[in-house]
Length: 159
Image (cartoon, rainbow, N blue to C red; front, top):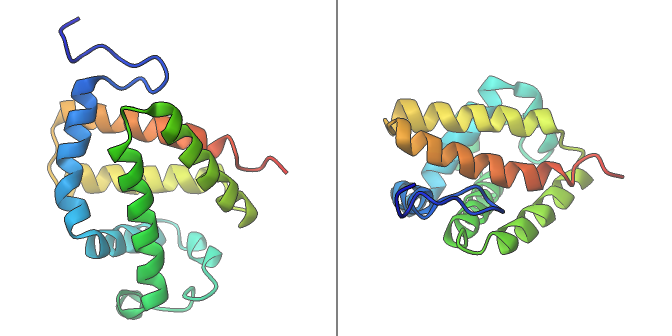
């Protein structure tokens, strides 16, 4: 295995994966509000029931969502959590603790594993269709998203 391809036993991410993820994430996080709003609008279109978790803006249409400061605040929180995970990938135990906390907070809102699976699908369609990421970058992103989702989902439906 070439240097840079050795996978971490905890995260299954190699240094090369971490580099690819961090590099492709930078432009997204630079415009976190707009990219996040678009991602969530696509999520709500893919599964409108997910919007029911958000009582403050479940009745809003796409244009109203884009203008809602409460919605944008949630989007920024989401993108910030993603960013913190990405910035700390060299410390997978820290990322696990962050994702467990995120899972616990979503458990309180009765979010289900299938909802995170839907989000994963929407995210990957975005990465492939809009960002035109190639196969090697998608492999890296798949490892990353599987890693974080595992540690979010393990805290869902536990009470």
